[in-house]
Image 1 (tube, rainbow, N blue to C red):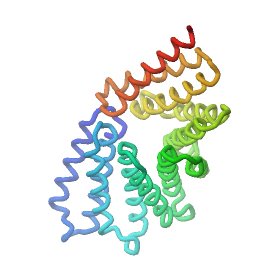
Image 2 (cartoon, one colour; image 1 turned 90 degrees about the vertical axis):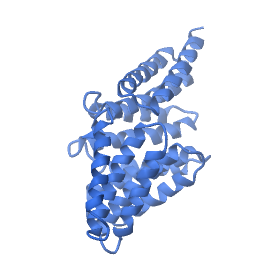
Image 3 (tube, one colour; image 1 turned 90 degrees about the horizontal axis):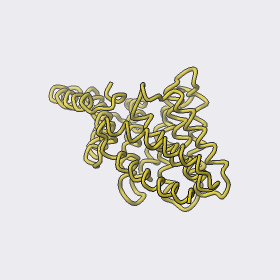
Length: 288
């Protein structure tokens, strides 16, 4: 429930509940139940950490997932091992986004690559698709910090592979989240190319995602996509010297800021506000 609400109260309650459960579900008494609870705790901490400005919650999430893996051994419970590997990879990616350097993001990529070794497409196709989305996200973030495009190309491939199982008819929200991740990778490639094809593809992917990830259904996810769409449109506008396109980009950013302000979101709000100021200055320059 807390993942789809804009506030944090439900997530705080979930974290408290999981920590209380760990007092009874001890590792000595019920090791696999303890590990499952650690995994659930990690997921709640990661979701909350992604909404806050610091890194403390994300660091706690990584710690919880690694604790779970002490009992969720690959040879003992291979699918559960794969799920936790995937969750750990996502937490490392989120943490790596907020810290300089590439070590955490490289760790995230390696962890995400491990998950589909057990969560295979033949055995669990939807879980496999989720691992591809996670891998694509980690590759895209790592690729942003490298000079080449190989990681970004691989991120695009991973997201497109996921869409073979994550169809809109079957899992509309997962399809939309994958479209968003595809858009991110395409946009990063577009930033490094002289043409506009990749940026146009990125904008199309973001708009596809918004068809399912609506403001009413998932406001924070909607706002995140609006930021990405706004940035892609702003780059296109700059390349084409197109003031109307830049005004569309500003509208996307302002919609995101509105949601973040209502949610009292601490990380993305100042980023979006700064981008609005930059875009307004660019627009004034275009209009002379």
